[in-house]
Amino acid sequence: MNMIAVLLFLWHCVGLGVSVGGSSGARKAQGQGQWQLLLNNTGVVAMHMAVTRHNTVIIFDQTEAGQSGYQLRTRYNGSKCSRTRDVLDSTCYAHSVEYDVSGNSLRPLRIDTDPWCSSGAFLSNGTLIQAGGYGNGARRIRFFRPCMNHQCNWRESRRSLSDERWYASSQILPENDRVVFVGGRGVFTYEFVPKVTTTEKSFDLPFLHQTNDRNAGGSNLYPFLHLSSDGNLFIFANRDSILFNLRRNRVVKTFPQIPGDGSRNYPSSGSSVLLPLDHSNGFQKLEVMICGGSTSGAYRAADEGRYLKGLSSCGRMVITGNKHKWNMENMPGPRLLHDMLILPTGNVLIINGAKRGCAGWDNARNASRQPYLYEPNKRLGRRFSVLKSTKIARMYHSSAVLLPDGRVLVAGGNPHNRYSFSNVAYPTELRLQAFVPNYVHSSYHDLRPSNVTVNYEGYGLLYGEEFNVRFWLEDKPTNVVEFTAYAPPFTTHSISMNQRLLKLRCKSMVWYPDGWVNSVLEAPPSPNVAPSGYYMLTVVNGGIPSMAQWVRFILYPYMGAGGYGGPGHSPLPPFSKI
Ligand SMILES: *[C@@H]1O[C@H](CO)[C@@H](O)[C@H](O)[C@H]1NC(C)=O
Ligand SMILES: *[C@@H]1O[C@H](CO)[C@@H](O)[C@H](O)[C@H]1NC(C)=O
Ligand SMILES: *[C@@H]1O[C@H](CO)[C@@H](O)[C@H](O)[C@H]1NC(C)=O
Ligand SMILES: *[C@@H]1O[C@H](CO)[C@@H](O)[C@H](O)[C@H]1NC(C)=O
Ligand SMILES: *[C@@H]1O[C@H](CO)[C@@H](O)[C@H](O)[C@H]1NC(C)=O
Image (cartoon, rainbow, N blue to C red):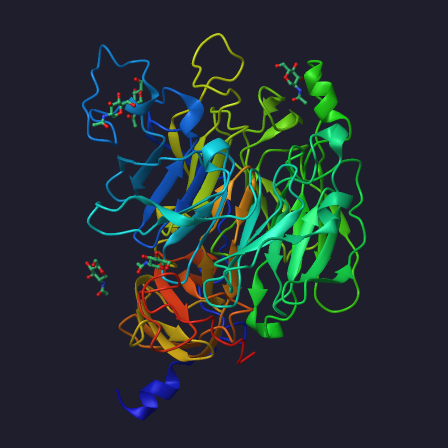
């Protein structure tokens, strides 16, 4: 390609480009989306879900739930299960499965201790760390190292948590592979995994005491955590929030209380999301949005069989800078027990949940069957739209995750402590669905970037490093081409822990008339902005996303597949480069 041709087709990355002819430049993905029924029986209630970098989904519930919908032929200890004699033997049932997205198939996983209402995060090498739970699982730490050959399984760590963590939250930290676990039922502390020294224990967090409402089931369980780009941790519990410096064990900032008559955390079970981080402000403006939850008194009322209408309100607050105010707006309806997922377009999908009641066994009524789409950059009053309704109720113990192909996997739902399929208002739900946002529709094929390849050498991309992304377009690029990187969350109980979406900086983009586009992007500047690990990289052309490709952001060029805890374990790297 000679120089003149290159100059001719040099495209501005965003906004400034020549608007393209015809209607494609302005065409927006409207429409309400579709629902697909993928499987009639996942075997296991999808109380917890996470997407691995091998495009599989880890699903698990609680080992104490007795008979699941997945009967095993052999127990984990190797002995045979009889289909007739052992129907009541809970060790003959799976409580965790791995779903393969491209094969639409499942395999059972072995999980030995009870991970009921636990938390998790992906480490920088793509391994899922999951900790806490109930009973024999309350202090356990487990790893799932995803693999291609379908041989991998849960592994229990020899180490354990300092405190029991049932309904705790987790956040992966900028220091390589350090995770903080916060709270739990009756536990007002936080702790790190791994510990820096062998004597390190948990640390008191008075904020969790202060926000605990004993008459309302706590109302501060599963606190919402978001890592700010200054390295501090945003912690929201009940109606209050702080910015917390974990290294100094100190509250840096106390934010105003969110308006609205009710708590937002479990068992009120609203949901929280960190809105997309954007290169255009240097990833320095971070904004949290919290939506829905139960109204005051709903927990008590549910005990008496009264299911109070949930909250419709959402609050948005910028947590960086020094002006903090909750800007309130309303969803199209009341909602609790829902999930909030960031789509590759940067819009937020609000899916699953109920209109009345609160979390807990049999505490909710009136399933919210219509997802809402929230477009954060639109004008106030124009941001919400109502999407296509599903026939399946997904309330307590349901979850949803974004897949690399842009669909949203939706599963679970069970307000009972056993699997119950009859004579109950809301039976245990084992069907697996995908919500297919309208942007996946084939009528957008002319806009959809395809054949995306990401080129870099070594184990991953260093912070701030330039890299190339090549893709193919049927037509010229529209005037808005964006590149987003998404950290896959660990999702349970209406919270998507560690979910994060970044709009990356594009330095140049060259379009060739044969349809290929070469772009040069810049990796995020620091692990505060994007903790090390695997992200889904998506090219979004005129609002239509490509299939995502996995990319890895790393701290050191020599950082291999290992991590902490193994042989050759070195002390935590110094916190630098930020
Ligand atoms: C689920 O079951 C229904 C009713 O038996 C059947 O019609 C449908 O094809 C099944 N769907 C899948 C995805 O297996
Ligand atoms: C395996 O577990 C079953 C059920 O707990 C038990 O009855 C059996 O003795 C165990 N077998 C072995 C080989 O440990
Ligand atoms: C909840 O469901 C009941 C019974 O189906 C119905 O009468 C009521 O109108 C619903 N309430 C809301 C808020 O949807
Ligand atoms: C894109 O990839 C598909 C599937 O691998 C292939 O069939 C197609 O030819 C590729 N397109 C271009 C323009 O190379
Ligand atoms: C990642 O690190 C964890 C923690 O050290 C380790 O258990 C796991 O095996 C590593 N995974 C890979 C893929 O190397």
